Image (cartoon, rainbow, N blue to C red; front, side, top):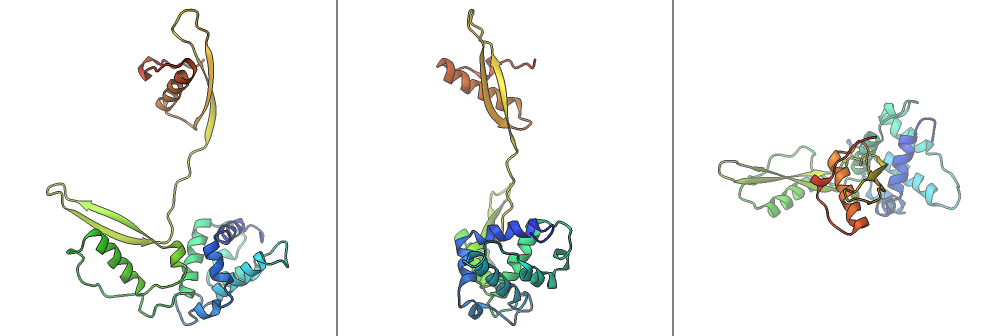
Length: 239
């Protein structure tokens, strides 16, 4: 870390661990794939800085590497990453990938294309292929093989049930993290006379719903006593 830059460190470590990403920037012929004329990226400066950094990280010369030159390069265009304040890792990742893509983008068409012919007569597979083909008219870099995907969304008419699928390209998908789990103990008192209470323990998500606890208890009873029971037969109480 260079001060409070763990958001940079964590992002670079994750990207460095992707073999396909790493191979692009460790390629000795990297300069051949850089678009030094593009006005959308950094004219190859950031791509070269990443390549130099990865060579240092994966070489045998250094035990630890400080990404000083890399940071100076990206700060030249994005001043917000040059201070001591903590920044959002996802925002940094998006900015980095977007600029690396533009540095390696060899497409010659303008970013602003005219609307093509209608998609109405195409089926879903054809629409997907057509959307991707049009996107590639102005976007073509090796990073697309690593990060690019498509999202399908479908609008269905409630009256005639006609469906209209559409496709959009994406470079990243944000996924929610599962809530933290907690371990709880539940003492079960069987209704049968002379039956000893049994203490069960299991993991559940923090702030669980009652239904998740009762379902877990049902599973435990089936395992302990070898018989099934219904959720409606379970009475929960706190002591």
